[in-house]
Amino acid sequence: MTGTKPTWQRARRPEQISQRISRILDATGELFGEMPYDHVTMQLIAKRANFTRSNLYRYFRSREEIFLTLLRFDMEIWMNEILSVFSQTISVPIESFVTSWTDILFRRKRLLRLLPLISLSLEKNVSENVYRDFKTSLNDMTCEVIPVIGNTLSECDQDQIGAFLLFNLALVAGAWPMSQYSFMQRSVLNDPELAWMKVDFKDFFRKSIAAYLRGTLQR
Image (cartoon, rainbow, N blue to C red):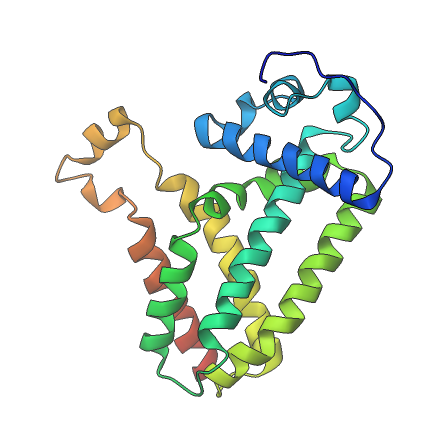
């Protein structure tokens, strides 16, 4: 029961460790859905997961390490959906690909919120081993997805597809935070003279990746 001080026994079996890590990630995901990243502390995560703070540190050394693990989990879900949607698709027009690709990503709201944190905080505040493990995992996921996208965009080679995936991450990292406006900002940007500055993320993302792919094929 929440609020009851837990009686702890060290998790020794792999399934016990896995269960506790899942509890930590679930608690972190819940808190991140309720408040900004900067407000989510190790103390709050421990309390939500019904851990003591000292026991939380048995599994993760920092808040950034927890969030990086959560991000990897969300990226795996995203990549698996890409594989599911495009594995049976061969050589489609760019417009068709872009529409499906944008819809898949836009459904992943938590991933969109997490991606801008990679370079700002998450990767900079973890150990070298954690950073290397994350990058290796991301590379493995990418290597699995590239051939599937290659079948869908048959005119692109593997290097171009790899660059396209990296462009996606950079685009989200920059454009998503720009598109999340406060009430005050929306009020200002409703001024007809300033409305051109307002970013509709989904539309901006779709047009940007379409332009990127067309430019890639023309080079």
